[in-house]
Image 1 (cartoon, rainbow, N blue to C red):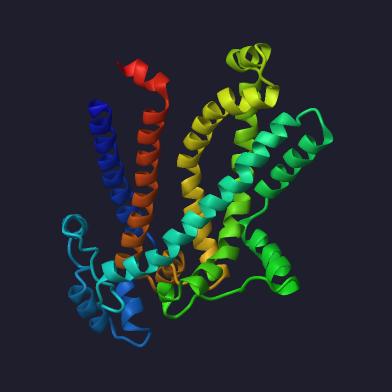
Image 2: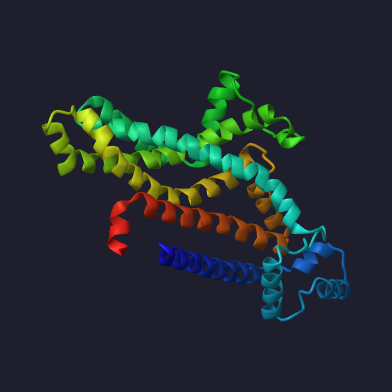
Length: 317
């Protein structure tokens, strides 16, 4: 287990390093002059050149990258090129919205996808199973923006159950209002991602229903449903856990779109704004933080899968 953890930690470190190189290089080849954007349209070439020197944009690209990476090791994500303020505190403030949104979306996706996926497999030869599978196919194909608009029309406009837009100015100091503001956005992401989880859960459950150990348990006296619950669902849970490592990326991408749609002050909305302002320092730090979250979740899923799956432990021993 120790060797496995060391290998995964090294893989995580390499992944973060490669991600930082890709993010940094990609932003440097985008068209446009950051100094010109910051200085304004009426700035003279001399003023733009002077500002470029003040911002350090005239230094070799390799040195700019090394300075940025060196700051990351100290917990310093750099300063905004537009506001000149530190980036780290602002990202931390926005994560207080994005992380709860992603967590609530994940819970919604699991609540929607896992039970309905198992039910669709159990009812595979009945009309109910076909209806669930067809609905999952349709919902999984819906863009997150459309799903959000449909849920707003239903729960906010028609039923008046949930707030449509905004987040409390005092944030989580009023947890009931903050939680209520995230329910509809979380349902938007959770519905789409839950449909994907449903399809994987159905497929895993179907394979378990035909497994020898489940059929043997049913043959010695357990009902088919009880045999599935006792001996089949642990294997299904491992499959769902493996899928979550991939779906987390979809949750964060959905958060970027949903934060715009529902006017939530999260990292996704800040990222879109900073891209428009060509604030490279903030954008590259925001992208690296989001990438790091995805890699950390993948690392946690790998470790948890290793702990829960006895087959992997026996293979390595």
